[in-house]
Picture 1 (cartoon, rainbow, N blue to C red):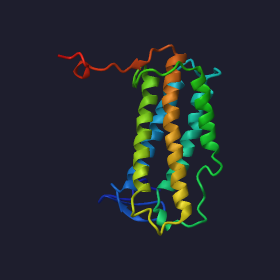
Picture 2: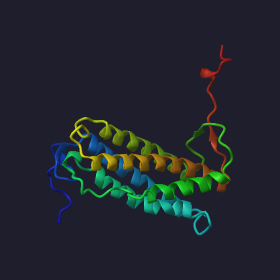
Picture 3: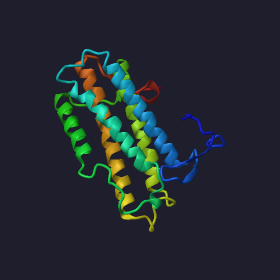
Picture 4: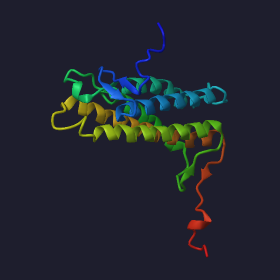
Length: 211
């Protein structure tokens, strides 16, 4: 089977439900952001495999990302279709909130070990920490894109069924929590690797003492 079909050569594509759209459609943008996020999580795991964190009691915080990659694929299959072509038999994403609860437990566990946050943190420190911060920013972009779908009257209006609306709300909650997880993981990595966090310092141009 050939990987190329040539059907998208003029800038159009099909959603998961067969709907035809152009490739800058907000649903396509959202799926692309999720794909980019998943790829960056793969980079985090690649850097993690090169560290001395692997096979320690802290490894669970990174290896959860393997599950998250699959969960993002599940989420993407829900996002990648016109919600108005769905029905009330649609499978709910994270129906019992198991994914979110698991992420929250890991966030709380790491937070207990972290010093109180008193400054804004800049991305950096080392390659692993920087890659986690980059994934966090892509996660936030994914959230913005999916939110655009949620409030686009083309896709969610008075005729949209309850199940698709609940599903996209569940997806948004998951993505929001994942960005919190990635931020906490970046800080936690700085702690256990004894890498000083890069703190934001107000520039001179914004200083009150600037002449």
